[in-house]
Length: 396
Image (cartoon, rainbow, N blue to C red; front, side, top):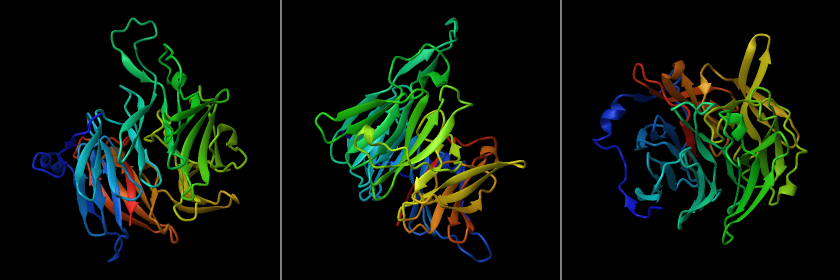
């Protein structure tokens, strides 16, 4: 662990040349009509955290591998190449909380605790507090492998899946992971998560309860309602075959014991996925609870004789009723949308031009109108790393 303060990493003369390689602009849509961006929109794009408002763009920090904003907007947790840092946004002061980088991180609802998952080299899960130390919760499996006959001199690091982390309550963390010896095979399906873990962080030491997944099944914890009374759960069956798995989506009441999980309320929709989520090899479910009404908002998908089509969708988890929104325009939606606190607008981060541009689109939910709010363009011959780019927070 590292407890010394580190220097704030703003836009300095040392990093300006790197940023000059890219252009980023606010884009106004329509004839004299302005994009609506109530509050501040935080975006991680191509290693930089930007703060976008109605009239300005600010570069908050650079050279970032992963980041997460506290729900109250007071703190930014972000990872550099060799350490993970907590920034107090009210003072601009940085504090190193972990002496290694991270691939994903997140917060509880009141911003008092956070989790950090490190990269494949160490494959660990940590939990920390704003005022307090960071503790290791889980050590995931990892191993170097060559060819199947072990005659190759080139070896590759393989990691047992560790992810699907979610704070159920202020002090309760849930996640799924591969728990067991690393098999000496190169098939990634052999290292999928096989257990779920409930961690009570306010116990000393933290209390960990595990459960084995049913045969040929794995669970992924996606989101929790603002009222903290419902959990969105994705279940994949037949996970050892990446091309044949079937996905089911459930909304289960908040649980504190494994036997309290309910599989009664299944969402009967075909929901899309994307590949830059925090779950490892199969990406992240494109569905979240809305902040006020606890409906589900996400990215639906349908396949017809003319091909596949993606569209935005809202689902009432109690009645199952759906409201279909606008179709998704060309380009790859990178990760889950953000909704403003009033649920009038949704922000979407999209990769276009085969990785040449990323832009944020604001979707007016009542009218399905779109407004291009912001764009960043890579220099010629350079493609973005969309696996880590994401929308971080929408703060009023």
